[in-house]
Length: 222
Image 1: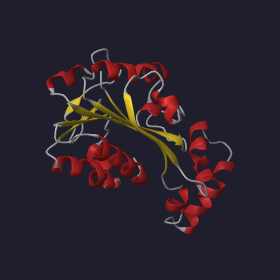
Image 2: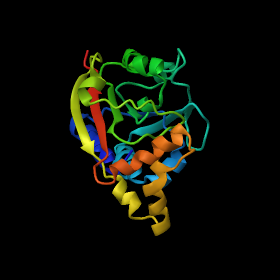
Image 3: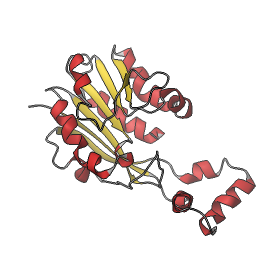
């Protein structure tokens, strides 16, 4: 989650949800939380810390065990979201930068499965790249929806929808050494590299155009 993306996500949450009623925030597909927050401290600053100050407990969920993971769960399993039953509604669910890393069959049904597990009053925040480089973890299907495509068929009350400009490769590029910048510029032309490596090298296309991310927030009202 990029800094501008986190800021918009926080704005959607704090402007549209009654935080006094929330007790739980479930971060689905969190990955290695310790590493994530070391690299991207603004996620803690914009989202998790303010939510904790409101008395909301943060639950991190991932399929691989690591430090600070509260629940180990494969989102593709049939009973993946059964664990939500242990938490009192209303709950805030976050699915941030996960969908582009799911195989198509799982991606196509995950939102309907989450919706079926939600109770009235629950909220769902989703972020997905819209105009963004290839970044496998371990795969990237290049799923890049706009808000209307993302929420289509999911009958929540969508209170926040935005395509966020979230920096560019220029910020990272300017922090590199001269030789590393030179390698980045010529890398797309290198012969005998794998398709995956070549696709990753195309990040250079975002040197002078912004990364853009889809951010939406919906509430289950019926």
